[in-house]
Length: 393
Image (cartoon, rainbow, N blue to C red):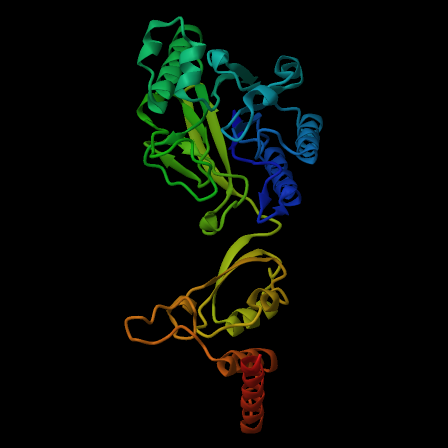
């Protein structure tokens, strides 16, 4: 049996106030194509389906259309859990009814011991889901069980649920492989800037050791593809790059093959994007010249400019070659003498710049030439006349 493990779609996300919905649909088409090419038997999504608990209407429509296409063209089950960006109650609306059409939404921690059994070619696999949760939710959901009084941390809560699932598996499905979907932060794994913290101070971390007895663990929440503790305990990574801190990550999905004896293999399948997130560095002139011949000049760009002098409208000039420049950083600007951000108090120099210096820089940026001696003399006369007028007032 083969299935695709993916997570953290964040459908409807805005990046720097730009809607990524078209980019996300472009990637989802590739996931559907992978499902066709590898004749997979299931598609599983490990949480953060939407980017917000109340997603935009167009995001809901887009996801609904995608699921309909998968059902019509592939006729395979889709199994997903809720993440910390999702509203579990909203996501699981109509879940019981949708199971009949092959869409399984596991978003209720009270139902973690109710697996989805997928059978293919006389082989079956039990898919269990642990949706995102916090310790309070787990204590309240299982208040009648004595051991819940000891649940005080995220790790306690996650371990408690994982053990409940394993106990159920051993009692009812011991002869078939078990796959666990979970949306959590495994301690020691690598995070990115775009992930919403689950708590403050690292209290959200959970242990990987309670997960080792599953045949495969499909994790969600962290956006970088990786495994932790054991190779079968794996994050597939997010659908796309959602922050510039992820610019080096190779996004994709995980193709998993499993049989009656357990995990056979797992493979990372890369995906192409409509607009990549990239960082370009150099002087303004170097970046502009590179942009003129850049075959992917419409990517989303963070430009790190190392010029030390004042630059007039750098983002406007960059957008002439990189129309989707979203952010710039001046890597050397705050260390130069002509920056108001520099600190010259130790040398006795003043941060104040004269009117002639400001205008001279402005003229150089606009005209790309220095003021001539005659122009400089005229400028000084004009400034002196203006100062005399101001003094008279």
